[in-house]
Each structure stands twice: as structure tokens, then as C-alpha cells.
Image (cartoon, rainbow, N blue to C red; front, side, top):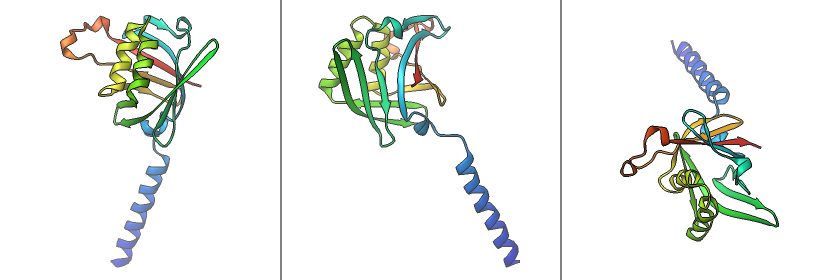
Length: 162
């Protein structure tokens, strides 16, 4: 009887190790790398802002240790904003120093109110991750109720891994 119990425990341990090693990657692991802003679209897929229309569309570099670099390249200037990030469940939250955050918001929001609104949510309470694969990241900002945003005004922020 003791031998049967030992065999069962060994099989369960091996099965547990195999499951944890061969299972799907978690979102916190998938997000590691450099992501380039591709577009901001409506929920129906209509492009609101295309990265090609944005001078210096930001790249987000997520590291394994929870650090983040947001790199903005415009002619004759490279600006790097340094912060931290966390992924908990389906929510991405980014933290930047207040001065860097204000500078980034000013730069990105000047001509792109939709992008700015989404980024404010990322830097606030976090933003839901709608889709995350090895090559694509899609964030779906949820507007606070007091803004009374209609569903046809909701957007998705789309990134591709580079």
C-alpha cells in the first residue's frame, strides 16, 4: 500500500512539473520586450490614429525585473522616460516620476486626445489588457463612468513587438 501511495505521489509531482513547464506563458512573461505603438482604433477596427501619423511614436521596453523605458525618437532628439510596470491578471499598470509623466502626457497628448486618454488610464489605476500574444499587445481603456463615453467612442491601443 505504501508503495502505491509513493507511486501516485511521484506521478502527481511529475504531472505538476510538466504542467508548469509546458503551459501557456503568463501575461507578465509575454509582455517582456520592446513594443512599438501601431495604432489606436475603434472597437470596430477603424483607425483613429496610425503610428505613421505620429511623429516619434513611442516604444515601450518592458524588462523582466519590472522596469520600463518609454523611448520617443523625433528628428534630432531621443527622449527616454524611465519607470516601472506591473501586470496583475489582465491589468497593466505603469508608474513614472511625476515630472516625466507630465512631459510625456504633454508630448503625446498634444495632437492625440484618444491616445492621451488611454495613457492616462495606464498611468492611473491601470488599463485592461484585451489581447497579448508573442507579437501583439492590445489595450482597452475603460473610461470612468462620469465621462459618459459612448461605446462607439471607445478605443483600442495596439502595439506590435519589435
